Image 1 (spheres, rainbow, N blue to C red):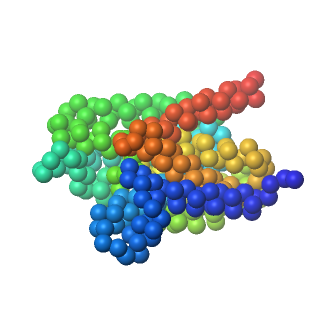
Image 2: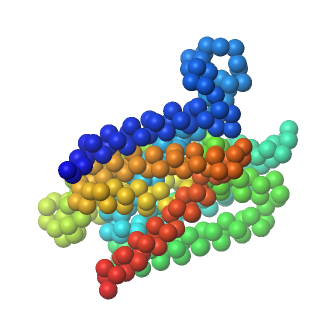
Image 3: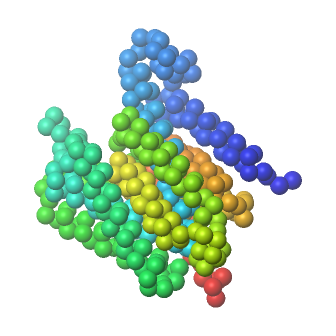
Length: 344
């Protein structure tokens, strides 16, 4: 019996809920369910436990779910508008552009450094970092858009452009780091780790708002994405303004990827893994379902990766960006090989 789309999304939502419950209860300090309930609803006298649950674990859990969904949804849309199954904000260099913009804000505009109290890193101007990340992502997106629309480049060639853009922005970031002070360098290196623990409630609320607004805007184009999949000529024949849809979609996905990257660092391959896992189960699906299911799966994947990162070297917490890179590289190579065999 074939798995229905409703059952698939319901199963993902149930799995996400189970992982959330596990993440609230377990960590460097395991607590009982009674203590969790007391901390959440304000009962009990353990203020330290309340702080751990409310200020450390819950914002981190929300960030994992929402950032994973953001990156997965951007992957679905980019793969469609660029007609490239290997496209994502990471593989196309958009995340690296955002990383350079954020590093520029930290190193040049003084948005981060070492605290005066101790050796901790403080990112003092998060809005400046977010603005820099968005500007960097738009620069990378603009280059991708130019090559995609006007050069007649192939799908594999577009990935090479993304690799070139990633290398360029990495070089620019390293150049800034070379001329920075020790405290600025520490802040920049700290930020580049894809770590969900560096944000609080403010960042979690901002990225949640961006996800909701972005998804609502992208879902309005779901029928257009379905038609674009048949080819640009067919889509235009059915009344779709392909260039307008691509431009608006690229701006929205850039904002989503830039916000996630600005607050939580570079987290790669989520936008590549989640959409293709959904397509393995449902080969021919509309983009309304793909956006929804990929968003759920992206949230589940990143939350699971973060739980794993906190467990492997406990009591230390391994940045989730490291785990997604280890997972994503073989998946990316497999998809690239599969694409090459198909085109041969």
